[in-house]
Image (cartoon, rainbow over all chains, first blue to last red; front, side, top):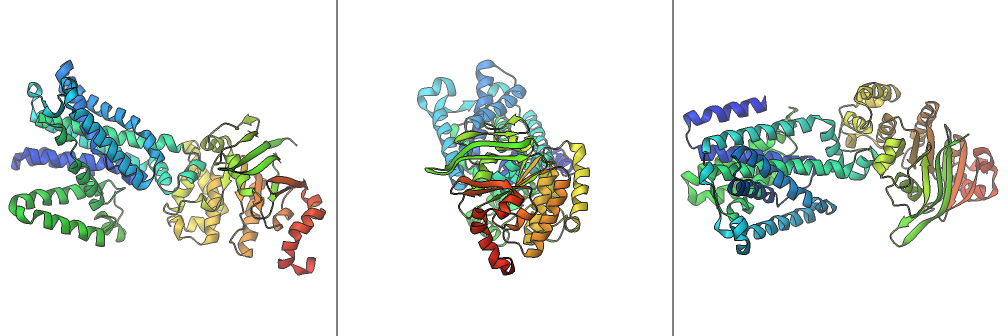
Length: 297
Length: 243
């Protein structure tokens, strides 16, 4: 049902409200928040460098469009695979725990950024001069692709909540040794969640690159993308299907509303909202419902 | 009787400290074996090494003819070696989800029936099925630990101090459940300080300083001088009339 409502919303809102870029970004953040939820909400690892996958996806797809003249759809999928590849390289990071994992992941994303933005590689990556994809520019098609990605992310996250695999991830989050003693292959389960999460960020990044069709390394490796996604997940409630959606809707909505109406108070209001959240609702908005005994999907 | 679990020349330890020095141990099919020993003798280390949580430095481990020496924990568990300890339950999962985790690698069709069986065995757990494991009392949690490990129909169940921190009433209950499990054909390996467990066992080993210092049938061990001196002294505190 959650999926159906989301789809209907994004299909029909464009007819009444024509800021398509805002809607696109909203979908993108919902997908990213859901992807982050898969790794953070279900396994407890918080990747501060999540944007690395996003950038890898954007660049992976843009480069095959430019050099190999791929059409956008397979290019978006390839962007996802590029992110999965980066994710595989980063699997050793799971030896680290807690904050160390987060920081090492952040460093990895930064390293990727510097490799791509390196002027000496400009002949391959266009370096700091950025990418431009006029040959495939088609925001409408990119919009629907993003919607498909969001639906995919929602279904994946929903399935994980109900499956044995999701339960196993929850057990790993609690106590990896006990999970292993229950017969769970801890390393493999974690890696699968990680790569799924990376894939979602990768295809989101690729669709984003396609939608705006002109971007620079700092656009798609911007730390604020990670921070937004993390804050949205936390605000809504991690480990649930609804939480990241609600979090994105409320906070990204507020972000744009304040940004347009009273930009001078923007930082203030936003900061206050987050402080209030941490103080009074550390497990997110959806925990309000759960406290009343309502089961949140 | 053939040994279902066979460990030979086990050496293991933590970092630079070697704890176990060539331990040989066998658990005969369908029997219950008690591993006695004071604190620091290496009982927990031995169980953890058998499960593969600690790396084996030398020696070999076989379960039901299958060589598990170089196999990761998760595969040893799938082969039928289960481990129950204090930390076995997941406090933030419900009782039902804990049992699901216990039967994680069972074929899907078997899980429901197995779970009903556990609820028959432990009616308390059936009543509390929706509660979080962390909200259970110590005794109930231990019951859940037993039920969770039995879910997977193990061949050998290794237990680390099942009586630790329990009131005598619960110790009795744990012992009764163990006898029940025993009737299912399960073999048991119980690491304990409480000599009471010897009464319910077939065979015993005494571990001291990382070496087996005595072994024999439960009957023989009870009358063995070393064991008497080392352990029935402790028993004397609880049951003075027997010394």
